Image (spheres, rainbow, N blue to C red):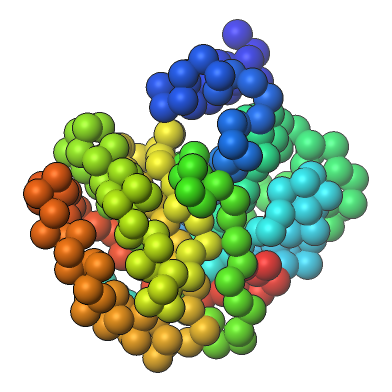
Amino acid sequence: MQRRDFLAASVSAAVGLTLGRSALAAEAPQGRQLIEIRTYNFASPQKQAAYEKFFAEAGIAALNRAAVEPVGAFKLLAKDNPALKLAADSTDLYVILPHKSAESFITLEDRLVADEAYQKAGTGILDTAQSDPAFVRYESSLLLAFEMFPQLQVPNQSPNRLIQLRTYESHNRERAQKKLEMMQKGGELTIFKRCGMPGVFFGEALIGSKLPNLTYMLSFEDDAAQKQGWANFRTDPDWKKLSKAEEYKETVIVPNIMNLLLRPAAGSQI
């Protein structure tokens, strides 16, 4: 089986589990995007900086030419994440790639290989030797956007913006689906917006690690806006009512939550 055929079968199967046979169409129903989250791991801050520069100057433009836009690129700083107890800033780079269809996701790397301008600009990055790679590896997960939040959005472009990436891990699919229902039909997404917590995306993971999970991203103008947003949320009357609803009593407390505060890297469009 060829790589492209294998990927097509894998993605179709994953999407099909969530949406049924209609998901095998070229585009997801209701205009829902597929959102890829990549986490690039670098051996040193210098390697991270070199790749960030290349990505800002050539990578994002190439992705836009491939109809993947807007592209997000983010870094994790120790000062923003005291709970992680980091001795230094992370050398990871988080990249957000929204796809209009499964085909976009499957064929992206082939289209970048065929992009001459991108390949030329990537000399010294894309063609590094095995003994001295540009990055160690990257991890990837694929999300299907929520029905009530089908398209990735860019709430603000503040130079001081703070991005929050959260993942809710559930112990089984039934609980993950119940949390998805709580966030959409239950009204949690509406409460987020009203409390000054604008979303970038909300998605259910189809492929990746720590499944099943739901992952979402919020964008704040600055640190103060992020703190105020969550303060508003915690005291919101509708949230208090929703969190005590009998049908969601086993859903409010999620077994494991990944919470990361990120800063835009050079050239980020989100």
